[in-house]
Image (cartoon, rainbow, N blue to C red; front, side, top):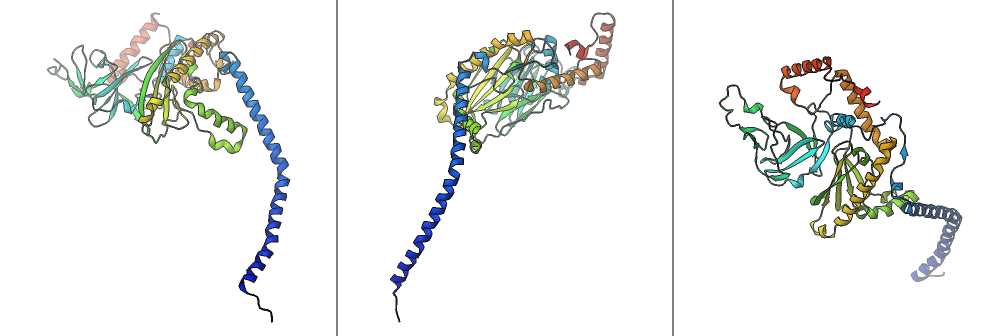
Length: 430
C-alpha cells in the first residue's frame, strides 16, 4: 500500500488548480478581445464629439459679443411694443409685480430686533423689520394718515417707526401706538389704522420673499426656495443701473458669471459627451422668483443672487448679493471679477435692447410666454370688470362707500370725455 503525506496532497492540489486558473484567464482575455473593437469605436466617437464641442465653443468666443445672446425669433402672439410700451409696463405692475412672490433679500441681513431695510420694487415702497419676537414682517412704507414715507433710511435699527409729517408712530408689528391729537377724536380707533402688511415667506435657506396681493394670489407658478444646508453670510451687495426693459434680463443665462461657476464648464462638457458623466453635472443656476436668479459655485460654498428691479419700460436696476458659507473663504472670493462680469452682461443687454425695440423681435420666446400669459389673463379680468384692477391696493377694502364713489366718478369722467373708456386688450396692440 502506498502512503502519501499531507504536503504531497497539497502540492498535487495546487498543480491541478493551475490549469483551471489559466483557462479562466484565457476566457476573460477572449471576451475582452471581442469587445475591444466596439469600445474603441465608441471612444473614437466620443473624442470626435468632444473635439467638435471644443471647436464650437472656441468659434463662439471669437464671434461678436451679441452672438452669445439668444436667437431672435418673431412671435406673432406678442405685441409689437413688448419692450417699449409705457401702458404695458403699468399693466405688468398690476399683473405680475403686484401678485407674484418676489425675492427681496436674505434673513441674515436682519439679525437684531429692530433691524429694518427699505425697498422699492416697481414703485412699491415697503419696509421689512425684525420684531422682538424674532419674526420678520413687511409693511407698505406709507403712513396711514397722509401717505408720507415712514422709514426714510435704506437701513437701520429701531423698534418704532415714526412718520415725520404728523408724528404717527408704529411698532415693529405695524400697530399704531401714537397719533398726536387724534386720541381725543371720538370714534378714532388706533387698531384700525396700523401699517398695511405685506405677505412674507422665508424659505429653508433664509431667503426672504414678499407678495403684495391682498387677495392671496400666488401669481406666476415658480419654485419658491432652494434647499441649502449651509448657513449663508453675506459678503457684499451692489447694484448696476441698466437702460433696457426688465424682461430682457429674465431668461436663464442672461448673466454669465464664469469666475464663480467656471469649474462647472468641465462637468457640462463631460455630460454632453457621455451619459455616464451625468452625475458630474451640478446645477449652477436656480430661479428664486421671476426677477431673481441664484447662482452657485461648484463647491457650493459661494452663492450669488442677481435680481432685476424694473424702473420703467426702458430702465432697470440689477441688484446683486454674494454670499459665503464659510467665513474663512471670504478673502478668496472673486468679488471684483464677479462685479466686472455682471457689468459686462448689463452692457450687452443695453447694446441689444435698441435692436429688439426697433424690430419687435422676441429673444428666447419660451422665457417670455409665461409673462405674456399672466399679462393677458389680468388684462381680460380688467376688461371684464370694466376698470383697472390693482391687487396690491387697499383702497377698496377700507370702505364700500369709497368704492361706489370711485366708480361713479369714473363713469362721469368717461361721459364728459375727460377720461377714455377702458380699452383692455385692444389698447395694448393685441
